Structures are given as C-alpha cells and as structure tokens.
Amino acid sequence: MQSIKQNTHPDALPDFRSLGVMLRIVLPVNGMALLAILAQAESWQDIAQRMIEISAHLQPVLLSGMLLLFALNPLLERMAYRQGAAAVLLLVVAVTLAISLLGGRLYNPPGEYGHFHLLRCALLGAAAAVLLLAYFRSRAHALSPASHEARLLALQARIRPHFLFNSINAVLGIVRNDPRRAETALEDMSDLFRAAMAHSGDLVPVRHEVALARQYLALEQLRLGERLKVEWRTEDMPDDALVPPLVLQPLLENAVYHGIEPLAGGGAVYVRLYRSGDEMHIEVHNPQQEQPDRHEGNKMALSNIRERLALQFDVEARYEVETGNNFYRVHIMLPYVKENTDEHR
Image 1 (tube, one colour):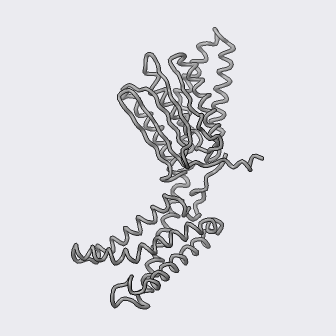
Image 2: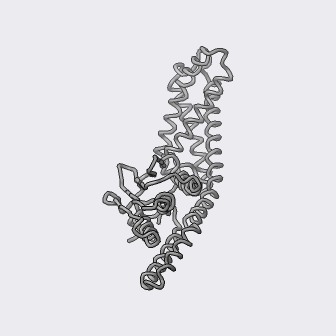
Image 3: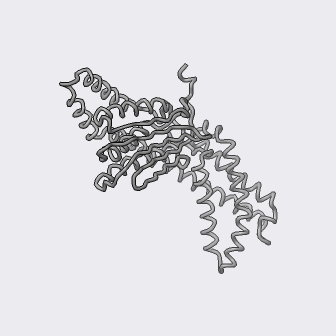
C-alpha cells in the first residue's frame, strides 16, 4: 500500500504541480483583479481599458510565479510549513517587483511609474499570496477529517447488510446438499471481509483490488448461479498501478444489485481495466431496467467514490456515468501512479 502525497498533512504547502492547485491560483487571482476593475470603472469602455492595462502586468507576474513554484516544488515540500510559506511569499514579491522593473512604463499607466507604484504592486502581490496560502491551509484542515470520515463511510458502505445477509443465505441454502462447497464459500466470505477491512493505505496495487473484486463476484455467483456472468478484460492492465482501495467492488456490487438481480434471466457484467498514457481507466458495464425504488443506494455508492477520488486526486480524476434504456456504464479515469517496488525488496 502507498499513500499519495497530496493534502496529507494539515499544515503543508499545496502541491504546486497539481492541476487543481494551479486552477485555484489562476481563477481567484483573476477574479480579484476583475472585482477591482469593476469597483473603479466608470463605463463599459473603461472596464475594457482597465482589463488590458492590469492584465498586461498581472498575467506575466502570475505565470512567472507559477512556473517558479512548479520548479521549486520539491524544495518547498522539504521545508517546514512556516519556512515554505515565507519562501513563497518572498518569491511572489520578488517576481512582482522584477516584472514591474523590467516592464517599466510598458506595464504602468502614465504618471504612475515610480517607487509608490512598485511598493503598491509588491503589497498587492503579497496580499494575494497570503490570502491564497490561508485558503489552501484552511482547505487542508477542512479536508483532513473528511478524508478519514470518507474512508470509514466507504468501508461501511462496501459491506452493506443486504450483501452480508444474501451471502449467508446463499451458503445456508447449500449446506445440506453440498457441505464442501458451503465450507469453501464461508472461507471465501471470511477472506473477503478480512481483505476489505485490511486496507489502511490511501492507494493499493490494482491487482489486489481486482483479486478482491473477483472474490466478491464469486460469492454473488454462488447466490445467483447462471444468472450472473462476468467478462474481465485486464490484458492491458498495468500490475504496478496504484488505485484507491475498494473503488472497484462497490461498482460491481451496484452492477449486480441494480443491474443483474432485477432481471429474470440475469445478464453479463463487463469489467475493463487498462492504462492509456498517464491515466488509469476502470470501466464497468451492466444491463439495467427501470427500478426507481433502488436508485438511492446506487447514488450513495457513487457519491462516496466521487468524494474519495476528489480528496485523493482533486480535479485530475474524472468519473463519468453513461446510462440508457437497457444499460449502465461507469468510467473512472485517474492518474497512473506506479507502485514503489523498492519498498518491497
């Protein structure tokens, strides 16, 4: 198991190489600039003129600062929080002053170029940096307990009472006719619950997740018999990929409970795991018929997975659902994170 280093400590600087962090810097800074323009503008033409003037100075400062933070991110990660925050603040002020000096009168309205303007730009840059650092720190504090709560909710949601009762009933139904098969099923069910409760890391090897899912489907096939068919496509699955624990099993549980079980003749669940470039893909496809009274459980499981993906990968993970008259398809795309093989040697 491995932990992804993103928002893992409440008092840690954000990952300046994360797409989500970059967006949370660019959008608020430009938003604050737009508010300042609206507060000072006297007409629509004045708004356009001020936007051109401010953007000519703001965008070079913003992009240069983000590039430097991107390059220095490994060094900032090794610093204590206060030292790193101070370094970020000094870097922003230095970049702001450097752009202002290099741009000269090109970036400044006539009559405003001078020490006062340089000081004002430096103070505005420092204020923006302080506000963003405070935002990222408060966001890390807010998400830290939510991460633990989401994990507990995920574990509880995976071992839902109906699955436990149905599995036990399926085993009890064959105890007299096939004791050996029932004993094997009980052992598999015990292994499944033990494995589900054993996940303590943020990320686990995808092969472990697939093995757990196969165990779960074996129990469901014991209950549903020939009504449940499963087609696995894992030939393009990288064995060294890491994924969040218990991300595949709830998708299969929904596929069985909401897709296969309501159909009198059953059906097939298609599972595909593969890598495409720097992304890991998980797809689950199953037949479906209208069951309004069962949709709520489906929404609970899906929202739980979405929350955990957002906590671990921010905007770099995507979750898509495609549904039709007789099918339901879930497609998860997340960054391809490789297992650190050196830890296992």
